Amino acid sequence: MSRCRSPPRTLQRRINAARAHVLRASLPRGPSPVKEPRKLNWEAQVFHGAVRRLRVQLVASVERANEHNFCCPRCAVNVWADGGDQASELAMCRARISTRSADDVLHLSWICRPRERPQDVDVDDWCLLPETSEMEAEESGTGTCDQGKRTLAQGVMGLSAAIGKKLGARAMELNPDDNGSGKLVRFYENSGFHTVPRVCKFSDPLMRAPIDVIANLAPPMWLELVVPSTFAGQQWLWDWEVVQRDSM
Image (cartoon, rainbow, N blue to C red; front, side, top):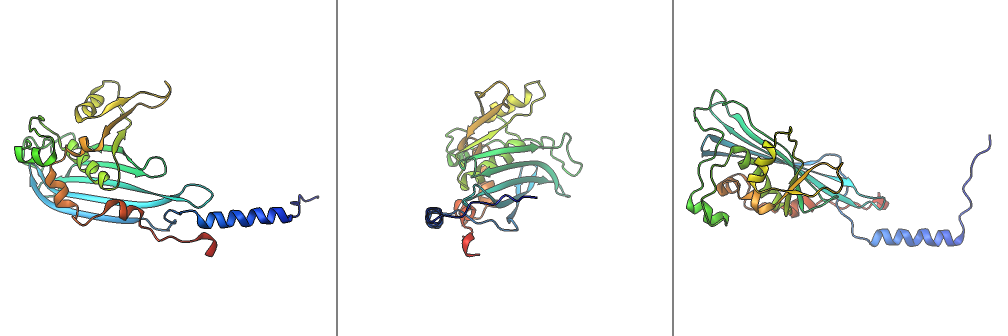
């Protein structure tokens, strides 16, 4: 059986390979891949409506972007709001940011709450947040407290957006998984999202909003209580040990 052999490397090919090696070594590199992702877990006790505890988990990892060993960090942002004596889950939100596709966009993956009030929660309007006070409105930059009733789902979504802003996001987007009734789309529109025109008729629907608009849905004290004041989001996301592939 004959074997395919590569042609002998000429002098010019060796020169080109050496130039490419020097170029790769001089280019700026992102964070290097690691075996285990980095995690941050925060928790805070609150007494705001039916909410008694807030939990946040950040899970950061890196992915290979191209053959030149450029690596891009990504981060999952998970937020929970618990209430009652047994700390029942009242609402949760999952979002993610990937610097490979667009480092300034936080994508909303999932948001939910129980259909019925948990047994250990004794607040009738448990799925709603207390009305925003004038002081909170001034601190959030809205300039008004006439925002109507906000839900817990909007609150945890807003907290996710506020954390995403610290990670460098300037917009939040989602693909509304509506069942055809339009109720979910109206919920997101009332939260500040607008529909983005489709690239083609076969593409999934997309909604987007400025990150500040969604972050204002969460009570300002939530971010102050659960996220350490010393947390530098972008630095934490990008501050990975750089490992030269050729030196390993």
